[in-house]
Image 1 (tube, rainbow, N blue to C red):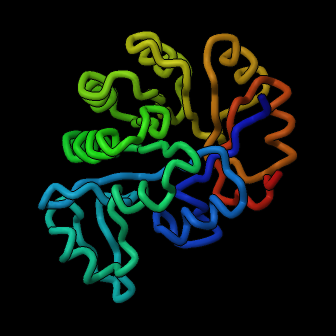
Image 2 (cartoon, rainbow, N blue to C red):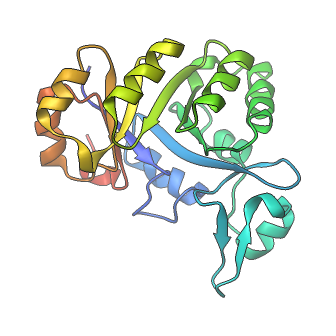
Length: 223
């Protein structure tokens, strides 16, 4: 199997990140998986937002956890809930759900449980986080859904966390990666790099064992 192409926040540089439009672009360009960021609103709705604060066009800054979904939607009309995004993808590819550190896991668990009861399978989802306690909570409540470690720079920390939960996949920040490191990690783990927008570099790293490119520009990797 070749290297996986994973849409980063949908297709971050082709449409506004973490929106239905961004997911549409990712699917249009044939990604193998889509990654998205999730935060929880004041009324416990899982929404697709990367930062703790939502910024609207007027410059208003709103902390996601301090406002309801409807309040946030008034400032960002393309704000998508996790459930809306998953239903849009509709099992065409697995969705890698990144729950941000310190967020509540229960709203995400409830969304996934709802879809599982409606005939979706555990292979339709992946859970990823920088927060180890979140991965533990997700694993306890939804065993069988694949977990992925997010890590900025430390292969030692990533490997330790992966061993603790029996995780095979690790995502790491591309700026710190190099061929020798990728080669050493690939003996035991499926390593993906984010963001990776350079096909030539991706091809070179694939020869060293890189398993996936999490990219803002899936169009340049289109098969």
